[in-house]
Image (tube, rainbow, N blue to C red; front, side, top):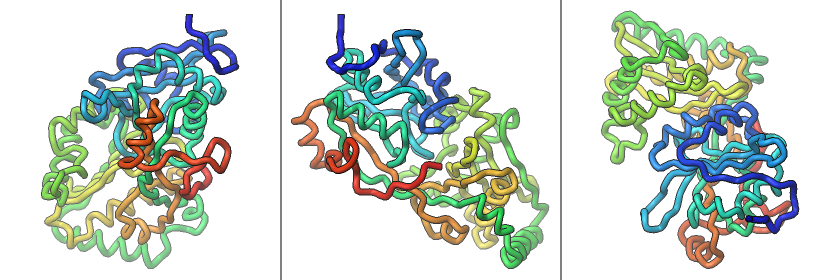
Length: 369
């Protein structure tokens, strides 16, 4: 019988095949406050060969944590990663009452071999409570945590914008002028899709917009979310979860019924994350991208959201919308062997250094939304 060397209340640890139902049970109370981290969300990265390390309190069987992983990198290496759509972020499921000692027991348990010799979590918020607890637990269990920067997320304070009476008159006039100009080409309409409104034709429309946008000519096509049948199938799998279907929403700008621009977002309580968006290149001079971005912001403000999180990269239009640098993202690699960690650090990045409680990384940490 396995007995942990770490003094703590006993936990039960098991490696479950697939994406365990405990993920959904923990999503509603996840320490990270990311309610979209459900089994179907993790499945958007690929549910094939998924395994979940499930941690339960021995006394009553209550789930404390769940770490889903899929293969990562060359098969021979045996590495794994936490799956899911790359943005908004990646994280694990951790109950509010889970302690670092609870999770450390799990990470040193024989069942944790299911994580492989190394496993990746990223991008993750540098200040995410669940991630910070995981890093502390990993150190207690003898794992080595390598990190590298994954950028800075840009956010709009919707509460402040609401209080300031957004949009100010000059901006409102400018947006109205852009829409009137577009209206000379045909009838302008707007659709907001969520919940039962999601269907195969809507996803195909979003894919058609991407196919007629700059994304189609991008060198690696990494910006596409809907352009191929395979990509759309992943989102259909996520949307089969009615909770996620209600959280995921698309703002679509149409001209004579044709979708010419969209914004694809996830509404997660007080935070709305912008996942993707683009426009038909032929309408670039009509500023349809700006119209849909500002329409999304207007809806977030009207709906009472606290934060519109626009993610990392392409800061130009985000700054113009009023976004400011919100928090840093990190890409973490958990390595079991000290020797392997030293080798991998040359490629990945340094091991988390000492200096604060259980170590710190030299990136900006802000209040968690």
